[in-house]
Every structure is written in C-alpha cells, then in structure tokens.
Amino acid sequence: RKKITVPLLRKMHERGEPITMITAHDFPSAHVADAAGMDVILVGDSLAMVGLGMEDTNEVLVEEMLLHCRSVARATKGALTIGDLPMGSYEIAPSQALETAIRFIKEGRMHGVKLEGGKEMVPTIQKITSAGIPVLGHVGLTPQRQNALGGFRVQGRTTADAVKVLEDALAVQEAGCFAVVVEAVPAEVAAIIAKKLSIPSIGIGAGSGCSGQVLVQVDMTGNFPPGRRIPKFVKQYGNVWAESLRAIEAYRDEVKSRQYPAVEHTYPIKEEELEGFVK
Ligand code: KIV
Ligand code: NA
Image (cartoon, rainbow, N blue to C red):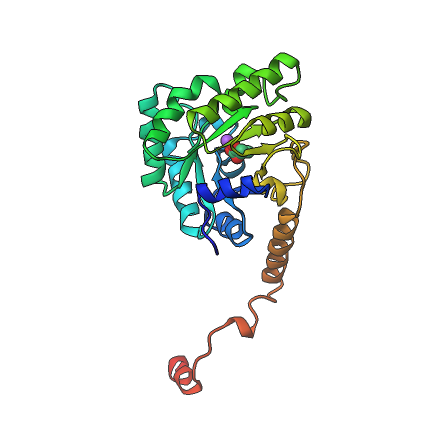
C-alpha cells in the first residue's frame, strides 16, 4: 500500500479529505490497522490502561512505550506512525523532550511523536521540529494532566475555556506541529478551531467538524469485557471480545471432550516407520 507521509497528510487536508487515525499497541493491532488502510497509527500512552492494565496513562515508562512502538513499526507498511511521549519524558526542558523524541525515532522506529499541551509547549515543539522530527499536538482534554483538570472532563465548555483551547491549538500550529489532536471539546467549538487552523485537527470526542478522527482501537473494536465503561464519543464498530471469548470457550470445550485435535490437525508417519517404533 501507499506510504503515508506528512506532506501527503497536508495534501489530504487541502482537498478536504478526512484523515483516519487509530491507536495500535502491538504487532497484531498495528498489522490489522495498516491492512485496513488507516492513514496514521498512533502508539498512544493509552497503552498503559488498555494494553498494560495500569490505573492511568501516567504510569507508563519511556522504555515500555519504546518496546511497543518497535512492535508496531514492524507491522506497519503504509501508515504514518506516531509515538506518544509519556508523562515525565518531555516537560522538564526542550532538550529533554528532543532526547526522548530522538529515542522514539531511533529505538521506537516511529516517524514522529505526539505530546500534550498548548502555549506552554511552544519552545519544546520548536526544539523537536528543529531536528526534523514531526510533532503532533494534543489540546483540549489532555489525560496526562487529569489530576490538575479534575479527571477526564470535557474542555472548552465556557467562552473563556473555548478561547483557551483555540489559543493552544493556534500556538502549537505556530510552533510547528504538522497536526493537532483535539480531545473532548464541544463539536461547535472544535469546528470553529478547525476552520481557524491551517494544519489538520484530528478530533476525538470533538464532533465531525475536525479534519480527521482518532479512536482507541480496543474501544472501537469492542475488545473489552462487557460492562466496562467507554467514553460517550466511542462508536463500537465490532465485538472482538465476544468473538475471542466464543473461540476460546469452543477450544476449551473441544479439549475437555477430546474433539480437538482431530486427525486433520496431526502429522502423519509412514506405516513401516511406526511399526518399527512400536516394537
Ligand atoms: O493515548 C492515546 O491513545 C491518545 C489518543 C486517544 C489521541 O492520546
Ligand atoms: Na495519549
């Protein structure tokens, strides 16, 4: 398939073609996302929660992200791959951020990185992009700051808050981001932000007015046990959990009842060889 690049995404944006983005956390989830023709594959730090069972995204380490980035990179033939800089790996100084970003390129084999934050991240984004590393911004709800925000809450719901999200988006654009994720913002606010930006905005819980959309793969494929709460903006396009459960239960039953393995699942041996062996 065709290799997606940053300039190609810009062209898509110019002709009004929506950009498709999904998370992947390992070789199989990247393989299927790439086969499905996703434009961008994000190794999100959502890995912490949906892939590693951690309480929140702040627990995941750079080394852990890099291991998963490498496995995603091995499976990806066409999509642009972006690695999420985890909390603590880029906030101290622009030089720290660039060092981490370089590790995501060299060790993680990613094409670019994503980082959360607005105006305050401008020097950091400038530093990373000055090394020729594409940076994806992330404004609105920034889960790494959930403790300061008071949880996973919708952002930009008052005039002042909406202005803040807009200013953050414009700031990261000015700093050199090739695109910006806009998370959990009222659709009308996100649509206006998309119009004011010249770079693509990738929405998640931000309505249809953005230049593209991103979802967490395990959420949208339904790869989680029934009863788990998923955000309102997620559309569940499949039920991978139910299909995996059905298959594994059928396997369990067939092993217990000695239906599996059947003859067709076994390796043959020549009659005379076998006779010699049994003797
Ligand atoms: O970590 C993640 O998966 C993300 C996307 C939801 C944008 O940041
Ligand atoms: Na993230």
